[in-house]
Length: 129
Image 1: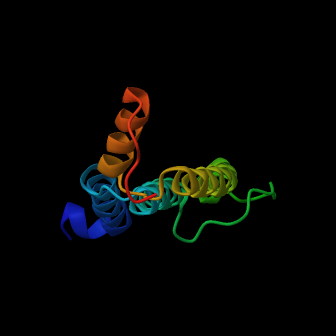
Image 2 (image 1 turned 30 degrees about the vertical axis):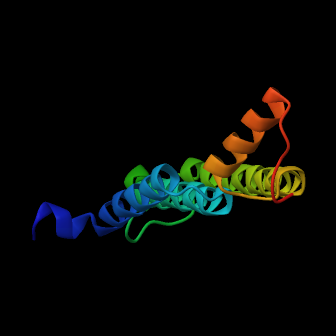
């Protein structure tokens, strides 16, 4: 079996990370950028969970006669759960901030927002708001 075939979860996580990163870099809409960040978060969670998985492993409760190699490490699961909570909080904050930006500038396009900020700083009128 090839090395990639045995690590398909890690390969899928890498592909998802690249998709999220390209979405973050190439999109001008703030909501699409937030979606890209969420895709990147999910890929990291998949990678950590895949690294912590042991095929045929059991919960880490010490029993007599069972070797240490069959126990599943609980730390990756705890990290993923903590990461999900943080990711949901950051997403909620980013969406609320995007709402305030839309209310203020009437757009979620980064170039349009930058143009309107420049007009505000120069003392000009904002057109279309």
